[in-house]
Image (cartoon, rainbow, N blue to C red; front, top):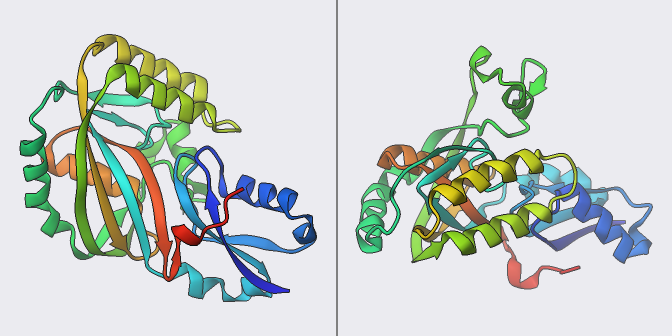
Length: 258
């Protein structure tokens, strides 16, 4: 058998868990070798290409296809994973800010991110350094003992789609709901505790969120890109949501949902 499936990965699943659910739904694939071309973080959703049987031989082709994402940036807070599934490391009083002014600042720096460039790997990623994945060094508080590697990427297009404010109450609902969907050991208890401290400190505030879309080469980390935007603006930022809308010609509107 040789087949490719455009699967919709849900929030909370790892790619491996998504494959298991696919096999449970379609038992005719139980004995087939299935892998995915391109990973998605547990809190990300959208297009996940499943390579079935002999199609695994063409992995490099699929992995090199252009990727499109829609994502949201939450301003005023930063975590160690650069997304909601992380311990809060920094926050600032950017709340109740002027959304138009913030969007203007983003628009001004967007051209500097277009084109070929070097991108650091996020501290919580699977790239290996000295025999261990980066998340090993992060979890053991040993990042200072290694050099975080970089890789070459290219961003083809960036576009601002929307902006809005979210209340602390609604933020708490989203964070708790999404983290509780994640199975396995991802430090969920410790992470939710740091978020509780944040909610109490900023209760009653509203936090700006900016929605954007990006077209980029394979291997581009949207989490890292969002962190880099924050560094350039000197504002803590974190990934609020990521949705992969296309891999090459495989679009989200055609994805199989389970």
